[in-house]
Image (cartoon, rainbow over all chains, first blue to last red):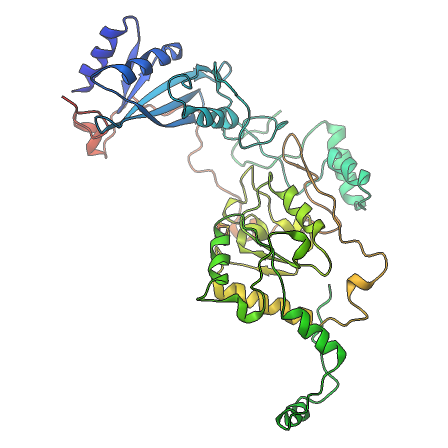
Length: 194
Length: 250
Ligand code: SF4
């Protein structure tokens, strides 16, 4: 089957689905169509993609993407790659957990690191980072803390635990606090985050 | 902990001469240290790839038992050496510090591998602690990625040398007011709070990393997405319609 034929097959079965081949992957233009397409690929006699091997998040700066790799155990074909593209600010994609149970942890991972919200996911929590972590560390605009400079919260914590803090470190933390800034790691070639 | 080579007051040559006649001359201190150095019980825990080397060291080929450290204990209460073998992530660091606090005196720490010394290959990662020495004192730093089993044995021998240099009256754990429990860091919104414990560790005045390697360079700074619709020139698989990645079921 050529790529065009595959695309036509899906579109005749599911009218109104906008699809586009991007290199060797099938981009689903409206992410809300994703469960429909995946369901068709899983159940139709021709494809039988019964195994979802990975869900990956990706940051393309102007948008975020979730990439799905499907295999067919029955027909021994694959991978068949689906992409769903969403904006950085409203990153919402319907979850594939009802279709493929194995997607649960991988969607949690993509949520944890890229902040893509999977709608109808049964248990969307952080998986690698801890509760209370702020931001999504794999996004390209994430700024890391500078781990050599203590901040006011660190000083407070240390003093609560009766640890002697050298004056120089205290002063530096106070200065930062006055300026209302965090100590962040330098990223040369990128503008300072405001 | 200051390191002093233990010098016996009995001349070494005389000792070996007497030894040939079956007379053993030893100070109480020597016996004490000999006993301690020959039965170090390491804690049984590994954090990443370095742990595999540690396991190899404990097995028959390298046989850490020859040095008296074969009894890996699964409980911090029963062990006196912590081998931090592997990457310490920020999520794991509080547990490592807590394990250290739970160990009974005398306790020693070997950091095994670049990761536990300074973050290793993951030094710039958002999730990896830049060295466990930010929170607890270390006795032997063992560089390598991973260090070979021989290196771990050498590290153990260095630790034994250190134990040999201690004297009964002056050993730390018999002193008053010894503080060997360190506050356990907490997970905060951007990383660990605190970032390090200034009683144990302080950042260097000069950044040797920058001095040696210069400013980190970002290769090809990007501000927009790549054009995925453009054809790929150098990949023959993508140009032909029957690419392997598309199902070719009839
Ligand atoms: S130092 Fe190297 S081998 Fe050891 S844990 Fe780190 S990456 Fe793995």
